[in-house]
Amino acid sequence: AQSVTQLGSHVSVSEGALVLLRCNYSSSVPPYLFWYVQYPNQGLQLLLKYTSAATLVKGINGFEAEFKKSETSFHLTKPSAHMSDAAEYFCAVSDGTGAGSYQLTFGKGTKLSVIP
Amino acid sequence: GAVVSQHPSWVICKSGTSVKIECRSLDFQATTMFWYRQFPKQSLMLMATSNEGSKATYEQGVEKDKFLINHASLTLSTLTVTSAHPEDSSFYICSARTGGAGQPQHFGDGTRLSIL
Image (cartoon, rainbow over all chains, first blue to last red; front, side):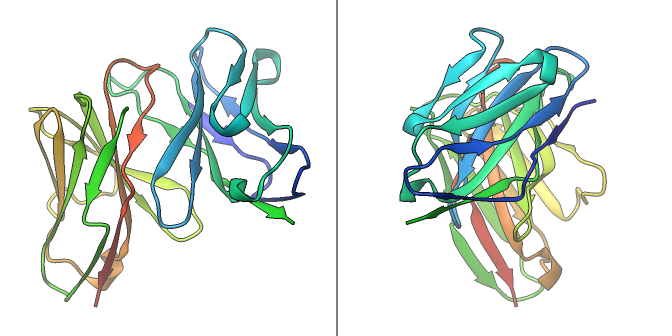
């Protein structure tokens, strides 16, 4: 079984400040991990993915995430927040099981607000 | 690349009617497509998984006779909400994936369904 916990349903940062969105996962096998962003009334856009290559993964829009097996974490960071980063962020895990369908399990999401 | 088109983006209809939502992968072949439902301020709830040419696999609690899914080709899946009622009003999102477990799902922009 797999699960995802996103700490903090709402995070506020000032424009230009560091963004840190937390994600912890549980998986019985080595996981595949993803971060998605959702803007209002839209679908989800892939920010980055971890698939057992480099533990530090760089994504789009200046975001990156680090896979830490010992902490079962995959936190998302961005050095300097921009107003356009305000959105809902979802962490998701797939452990490669599910009879080939490889379903994603999503966290509950973290809403990021950026204060000018 | 990896564009998923979902249509329509917004539907308002009377109770008792059926509504069809299309999900197309525009620039890749989707071996698997997923249908999600999202309630306000919540995460995505997986409704069903479909592989091309096979019957969809529904999640527990999802009525297969109410939510008909057809995955007739590698680029098209449809969700038909039959005899829709106000409680079916929601945001429905499809996603498509090609390849194995490490490949991300690519999402459509969602369909806002409002049943009067």
